[in-house]
Image (cartoon, rainbow, N blue to C red; front, side, top):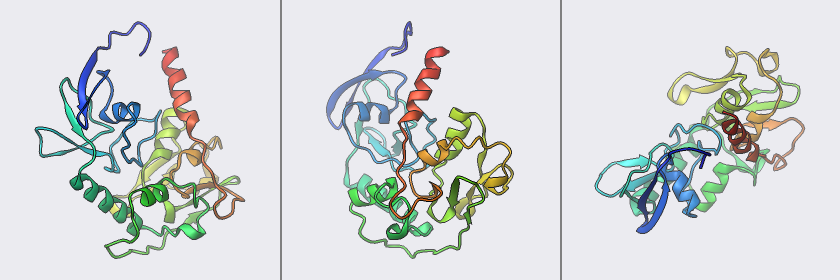
Length: 241
């Protein structure tokens, strides 16, 4: 808790268990603190939450709606349910749609065995996809001297967009287009290597959950990601405010 703050403590239930938490926390924050696993892809500690992937949906007693746990603040007396057949059904469906949307072929991916999407697919028992694969023809941008972007692996979580703006302060990345035509871009859709705003810090590469962003020169399964720096930098900046 920040020094000198007047943040209050609230009590609630997570899967029937009484827990307490700060009033400024989200449902996902409280679940993580109490060891309750909720799948996420767009969420990364230290970055703003946008509720884009919808994998972290939970049920709240008294409501028929599903709530994104990463953007839903806790309330006093709230009773949250994180594991039901309904949630399992929707989470698997979301993952299947992500796998079908682009060309996620793990066996030839630079992030094979180091991929958040692959990990969740295995953990949630995805052994096939029930919708037709789109097999889109996506481009690869290898114009940067140190990094490369493979749109075939991108799941549009926008971690790269947020870390570049919120942590690095460069705002090189953005999203162009809508729906299935959306894609991440650098500057005004210029080749990454020609970007005049990129600082070559590599933060975007390290927070990417898949093999969409990777170091050049990495072969299949060699690209590991280092993400702990995001929360560390974010906390240090808060302490200075």
